[in-house]
Image (cartoon, rainbow over all chains, first blue to last red; front, side, top):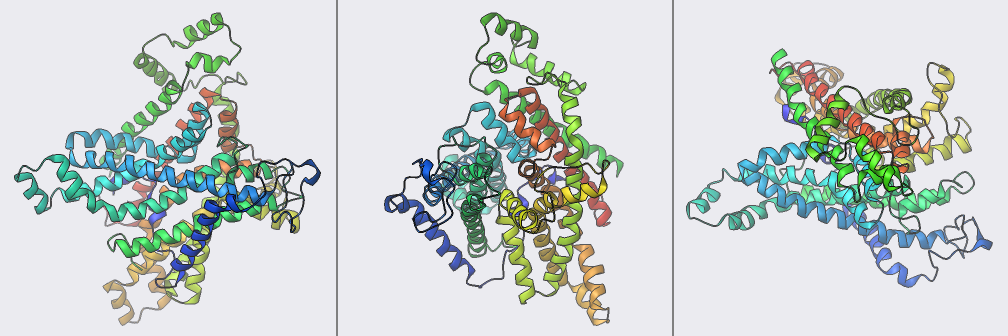
Length: 288
Length: 313
């Protein structure tokens, strides 16, 4: 019980979202596929330029020409949302991948080598004790906003949760007979770690990874929304929403259209994550 | 119990130490020299040297860290680079709105989420259960600012029930406080309600499957009493845990919500200090918010013994 000092990751994994077999994960996958595809090929298909400033067509309502209307500079909001999907999903996937790789590496070492464990986990506890949005905002402030620092700002608060997960699995595995057998056969340590232990972390990592993507997409949007994310001219969902704030009262669509895509993406990634948890790891699945 | 408490408090010290180290490192790992960051681009070499000497930046990093930590521990948080006011004073003037918002949010969330979760568990698998859980997923996945602007659009702009932005302190005018605090509280509550409702449902469900519940049913204990007395009470520990760890979302949410509703609290101060690159202020705010988070989770650990007398330390 007392190990719960500074936890912060549990809630995203707590409890099932929806009853099993509701066909929901199929729907979620479909919606994600559509969003992903539009991010991938949308910019090739649509003619509108998300950066094209058109003072004549400022703040237009949605119409056949501008599906989601135009913003204060006359830019096509639909184009900005589609291009924004590219940025937001890219940042989400890249930072989740980075967190997974970094966290797995450190988790493997911390779980296997007793000497490292104490120090590494104290540092991880310290990082996790800083509320992640606050840490991310401060990091970007210090280093200046660009793609690299935004990724860093998302990865640094997130990767300790991966470390803790992997370390926990490894700690449990060290007692297993087949690991002891491998050790007694003088198997090189790297081989024990990579061949015998790493595969066991895969299922929980895939599950954790999906929640990491969802939280990274959200964090990027929050950073941009607060004005400390990617440079404002880059169309990301957070930036589009941030620019819409000024004219929200007369053109709520400036916030609601990108907001809808953002919410749909996060919602469906979370749903998939839950489905993955049930499918891959019965031990992780919380009781119904 | 006292011994446990002392051990538990002692355990937070290394964590706080690491937090302080990270916060200290933030400024010193940044590209460029802290003096030039603080002085701005237009500073002359003489000014830079003066700042460096004044802040002790010529000393080794370890010495600087100890000096800095010593000052913080004595309550000397330094001066804001921007307003030149004491950081402690600036933070103090912003505590009120954030504190009242946080208390209101936790209260509202628990009052809504626990009945929601218990009801969903009781009606397990039925339409009402699915609806409750669907609302919880939605609340969890919708970004805080989208919720905030959605509420503003519906309840302020369309219905006209609440002001769009601003904040009045409870002590200044209780009625205006209610009018200005309702939407931010609802906004902040969505994530919390989702978290607590889900954990309540799953923990109550787990307890409802236990043998002693079957025994209680067999001897004719009324269903309401089973759910509320037997199940909910035993589900208290996971619920309290989520309330504690969810505090991180609450703190992050405060930063966003106060920006959406233009509330002069700590969350907005975080954004303001970051945009102004006011490093002493940023450092103090991170330290403070982390301390709050650590203390909340300390309180949660202690609360376990209250809710579950079987837990003894």
